[in-house]
Length: 129
Image 1: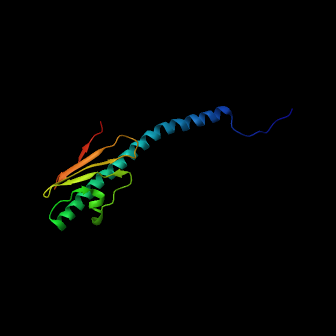
Image 2: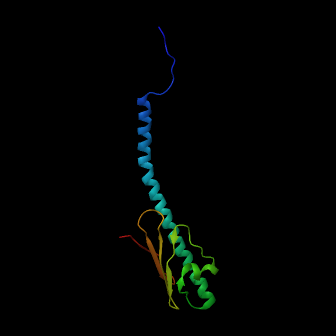
Image 3: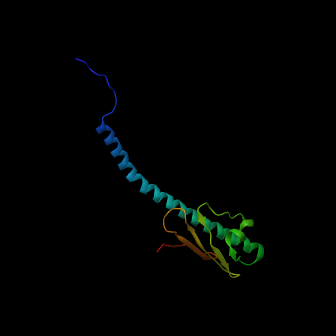
């Protein structure tokens, strides 16, 4: 009688391992996407706060609030947009300002827009349609 001393995995064992990996991936990938979207939205809110701070610094220097595109107006005040976040125009009327259109476009979901009116207002989140 000849006995073979073959080592390895059977087809059934390999299929079970692949099925387990597939189940774990199906659970993990949606969670990762949600965390990524939340991080982009947190970066957008942080950018709005930074623009508010830069707007107040501009007011201290010129006794009026700035008007224009945030990255151009506030580049001298240390404002740098976060990666994946697009900062929209700001509107200054001398004694008040509106900062808006700061949203994420890189998360793969619909963009979330944030805006704030100042001075001293809170940030408002505008949910996507």
